Length: 619
Picture 1: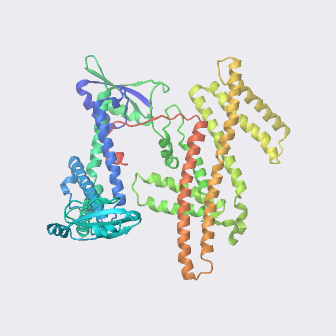
Picture 2: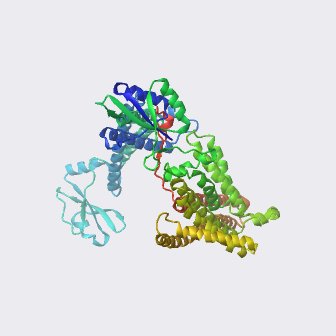
Picture 3: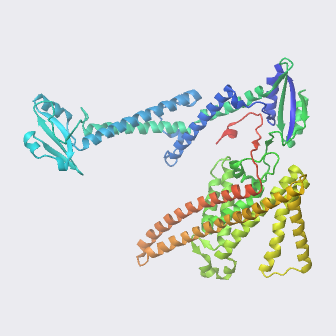
């Protein structure tokens, strides 16, 4: 990344920014945080409002049942005028109006349901009959009381009639010559909805439901035609970037001269210089200290590694002073996912599904689908060698007997998981050492290299004899010599420039942390074996369950019942396995690898001043 200062007169500043915008390569340096300025706060709030609305519209689209072959243009929309989808303000007003109507209808439905519950006990009767009885001098009063407290004498005294008994309650009416209700001990009077019957309420309910369906159709039509929202989001993003560029210029000499600073990636710098020189723009390349300045970051990876970049961005971009970890975590994440997935059948199913979906989605989704293709391939390969295919133990399949020696046993898989964890942590420590070398120089990095090398040399010295592999004596002496050198570097050079006692004290503390941390971190990787084993065992359990339940049944009953058990069982298992195979490898990367590699993160993404398009802002 290169840093530049650009010089222009105030009257020409805006046209100069338009030139930068056309070039689309300069990331404007923020001298002042725009988030503290009211104007930019308003733009950000408007952007957030649009993002929330678009997120809600996406939910509406995903839940709307489009008929086979139905186009979104064919969705009925009696409550939306076509002109209302053409502008942002009209679109939002239409959506808010419909949303408000749906909520009001929903409240009315709730009120009707409450009235229905009040009337259900008393049956569907014409409310005008009660009024006619009043006119004739007969007043009905409605009551409820506990069964144990109902007094049969009320039937004689007040013409009480039991209408219904529900649970421990009795519902009854009394008939009186006055509108004043009698005083009945323990009984509770009930006020019924006036002027309505159950049947009239149900008619109203059906009418409201029909209106809601019509409104939801109109709302779905808006969801499928949100171009005005997308255009507004692009407009706000362009406004924000341009206004920020205007704001970040430093005015000098009574606001006559404007100085703007920005960052340009190395490959694009030469072309930018040529274009600005042709326009007689004055600029100067500036030296900068990457440790002191917030330099924007551009990740540069090949096609395979690029699909794993969302894992890094989800945690935090690397800062300008450290390595991009994407290439380091990509192969390990694939291995971890494959070991947790643990079944070749599931991997094959996902690989075929992802390959099909990739042909149907837009360009913005293809990298995510491609990532799942790689992960599915890892699940297929590792699942095969772990000997599981939809819960079937491949080692027991007759035609697989010739290659059964290639299948990995459960004990060996556990050892592989621990060994992989050990290698992963050591790799992270080497990355950390190279990072120290890059940032602070070779002398300061020697102790960082000493620790992982010491562990490697000790592992060779003690591990190979454990495997009955004898080392030649000269090699053994060399390794012990290297161990001594590593110990010396770790204890005497871990704080260059400090006295020997400070170095030794820090070395002892580091030794304790290294010993306890290495053991605990390595044991964390046993989850790779445990999760993969659990998935394969559950798959086998569902196979056995299907076979046991359908045993002895005729084929026309056994096949459909067995298929239901297998589909439901393996469906549940695939869902649980997928979640575990994503969550736990991510944890191992974020916690174990990033911690041992001293990953700092906190990088700022490279966002040049340019004309933003719909594709740049799409979710």
